Image 1 (tube, one colour):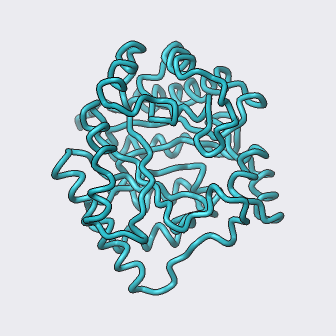
Image 2: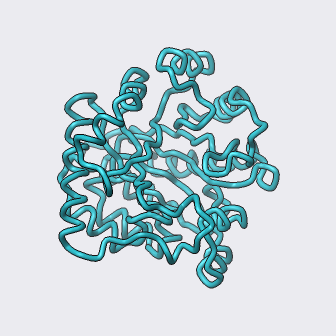
Image 3: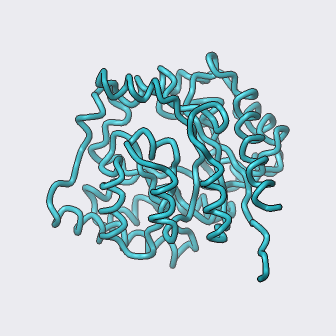
Length: 301
């Protein structure tokens, strides 16, 4: 039996240095610091954040100066309220920026009706409750994803996220059942656990649709408090619900083994929304990198 190399690259989200949802966290940290430190640790690429240049050429220049690739970039989608045609028009600038800088996936986050940035208990998140709502949403997503792939060569990777329509495992099952193959999944281990799921089971169930991976760890005691006390998403983040791989409770070994067994080819992105004053950026980014690197080296051998 021929063993294929495990073609996975390790990237990071700049949220370890400065937060997009809470700009006050790490707001004073220059982008150059994040890029230089990430590269020094060993990361090959970065996802976008609010401090990156918006113009494609300027973005490419900054990435080139620090010798890092563009992994992807979050896109705030509104297909729960907009048609595919409307979304295509709105997303054009973002897609061109990704395509011109070599990204192959777009992180799609549904923000229509989302409460992820509001001081509202997560239990009050939006939900689709009727079959026709899921069907209509799935049709919109599929049409949009088919366009991003055909027009830009970019796959849509849907980010299941706390505070949004697709948060819990049953939501994700409905999403996958009501969308076409063009709609891929961004598998996020941290949001999976916080949303009440088993990451190994979720990854196995939807592996064929996984186009992008976020490795994020959780602190179980904080998850429990967030659920019991009715915290908002941002309140949960401020209290330390997320951390990097190797600092929480998730066993990443079976996740890496499953990715290897399925010949996953793409990025594993270390991501953890934390306050850099409480969780120093370099130290935690380094811990996350070495945890993932050791696991990859183990399954590769």
